[in-house]
Image (spheres, rainbow, N blue to C red):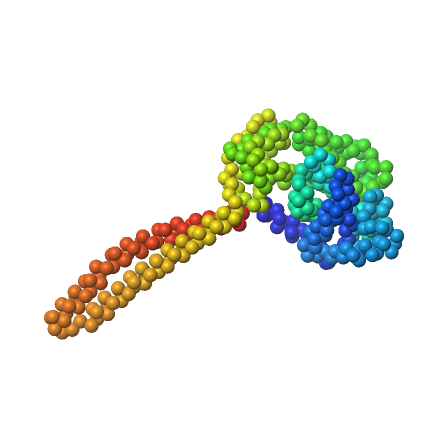
Length: 398
């Protein structure tokens, strides 16, 4: 997962070699309060600001520009309004998004416009069962990443006889006539090829999709929602009730399901690999596979991050105390050795003086095994506490 994030970061660094200006309209929506929509659009601007090479137009400045042009609010419900707004704002790009709540699921459709000519650069959809708070944090972050990291190639925008095919999910193969093209969706195809030969989109476990003709609006972007052939679903059962804030995440990262506190079973997961994630807990043994018509039993080890931090600090304190005792015993052992050598080097010529010094050396030497045993006694727990400290530290880093 870490490697994937690094690759995305590098790609974004090349894609945004210079600062680009962008504006974000207030989101429109259905079955969601206007204040929440405004809050979500504000959070989306923050996510864009985190991308170092983007200069996001100030909200008040955007509002003033649109008011001068006769718009009551910086929000649009139609594509025409969005296109006109993008041209008025005098930024390189503009984002408009619509959020609909269907049952417990929020469905987001976001558009990225070229403000110079009003052309659509990218369209993404994002739908997951999240709380409004989850939508504000993780949801807005994901939509921003999707919208800005998978833009349509510039050659398509310049109308160089190319058509850009996007699929959900991505990674589908494209067959042109009897030939299967290298690569996978999203991809750009020659418009003449698309008009003259049958195009079939293929992906394992999904129904083949036959692209019969170009859209009526002569768009350069074709978006295909692939349908599963036969749902391959199963269930997962947990050994004990889960705490709040646990999320089931598919191996691809496309599917995320927030679990309620006390959940012991989750039904109807698509077949595949999953793992458990949390922002407040550390989870061990949280990876599992779902098989068709089967229930997978999972017994994850779940710890509060705050408890792990306390444990880490506790082990660190114990380790440091043991190191202190070890240092004292080692120091005293060095003192005994130095004292013995000093007495031995100062032997007198008289027999009585030599005998006294010999007795002194013998007393010192008798202490050395005791000190060595104490040093070994302190060394073992020191190693143990340090190992536990490192273990807690690694857990927190994960």
